[in-house]
Amino acid sequence: MKSDLMAFGAHPDDTELACSGTLASLIQKGSVVVVADLTRGEMGSRGTPELRLQEAEEAAGILGLAKRVNLGLPDTRLMNIRENQLPIIETVRSLRPHVCLIPAPADRHPDHVHASTLLLDALFYSGLAKIETQDPEGQIQEPYRPVHILHYIQDDFLQPDFVYDISDTFHLKEKAIAAFASQFNVADPGDEPATYISDPAFIESVRARARLLGHMGGYTYGEGFISAKKPVPLSS
Image (cartoon, rainbow, N blue to C red):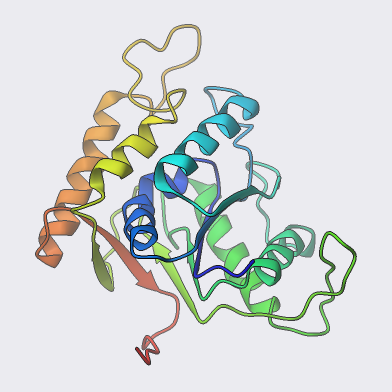
């Protein structure tokens, strides 16, 4: 399977919060879009890894993803080491995305920043022939490096290089986020602790961010991206 775009998240729900309006829009236009969650979010204060995987699959169906994979890396331990790079390299060589979306280079959550650095290096090393990996059938994989790598914007506001119009798919972004009912918009936290993201005010901030980025681009709603390579190489 070859994909047009692969979005990576440190945890299930990261891509929904940061770039799912863009994913849904590109899918509607015919792109093959895949999401790869690095961890199961097992260190999160709310929910269980099993529940979060179920929520992730529900969100994938809402967005229309061609595939969603979880690489099973250790939550809160996304160190930039070869052991963590190899599952990423194997996945990229298997699905061969033209564009990769990765976490923000600066953010309040250390996992997001660590994931950003880990992914940048793994995506580079994926193009090196002497780093050998095998597919599930045991065949040696061909080296491959994506053409474009873009950081999405997470909790900290970062100046985007460009804003993508999600006005027509913002409702799908909201539905995909709502699929993670264990994490967001929790009026009554019950037996589990209330968190920064479970507070209903957090979802209001996500809406406000989409309105702000949309306004910056001249749209109703938008999502912002920062190119890992400058200037951005384009041929079409």
